[in-house]
Length: 156
Image (cartoon, rainbow, N blue to C red):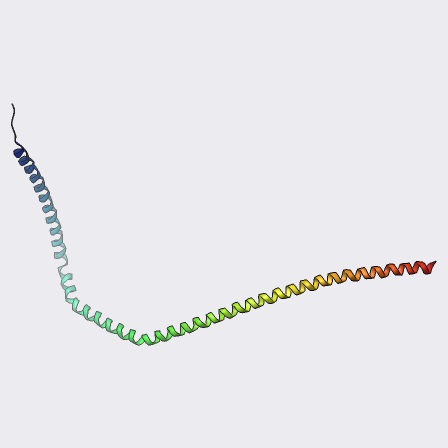
């Protein structure tokens, strides 16, 4: 037994299945939305008193926030000159520290140069002393030898 189905009928059947699938999805979506709305309704019912009290407090909270903003503005306008002065003092201190650091660096360089010159001078003096001492010892040895010769001549 053969059944002939046209493409139009096949597409219509597929479209019906897709419609059924979309309908099922929409139904499940509506069930979930209903569940969420039920939960929201329960929360609202449980917290209606607290919500009403909070709504009544909103004008007071707004007023307090405005007062705090005014106080903050007054405090900032009062402190601005002091902060500016403080910043100028910090700049001055920073300049003094920079100058002091520069002077310490200059002094350190001069001290380093002086120590280097002093070390060279001491080294030169020690070297000269060593040379002159050897020369003196050689001179004294020469005198001693001459004296020994003179003594030998006198002893004969």
